[in-house]
Length: 104
Image (cartoon, rainbow, N blue to C red):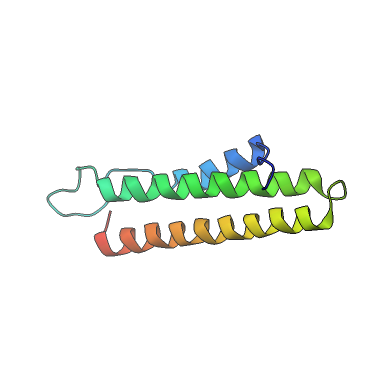
């Protein structure tokens, strides 16, 4: 079992800043519903923010434990970090695709 990841305020803040560029929930299209909230975009932006925050926590845990934990534990945390990176990347791609297709 992996130890709980440590919070990294700088990493979480950076992830939130990255995700916040997508959380402008007003549609940018010129369609009649241009001022309506796109709930799917909000959902996808929330998923992206959650995923990037988890990735940052895992990387922070990895960085603070380098050299002080057994190699197998380090590899477990590194693997978890990579897994959350992939989840974060997929969440970003999902959001980008929605924005591109939906025009919001």
